[in-house]
Length: 106
Image (tube, rainbow, N blue to C red; front, side):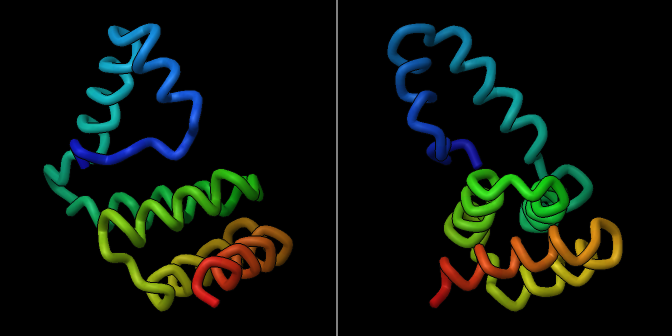
């Protein structure tokens, strides 16, 4: 995911004004999404599940879009993830995440 663009517009400002901090964040991202044991797609599906459990609309949408774009994650794979979200985080987190998914794919 080395060539990935960050979803937050503020990252561009950070890149321009504080390049050392920006590079540190890029390196952390690359170290986390390394694919050393779990492949990067599986790691991204885990990230989607975790953020869906938080019910943070903006973060959920960003993670879903990013996963679909960078890892070729399908809506069906996200639905499988959302089944786990329903079990672990409950119906409100599940339904909010489902609505966000459908706003992206429909």
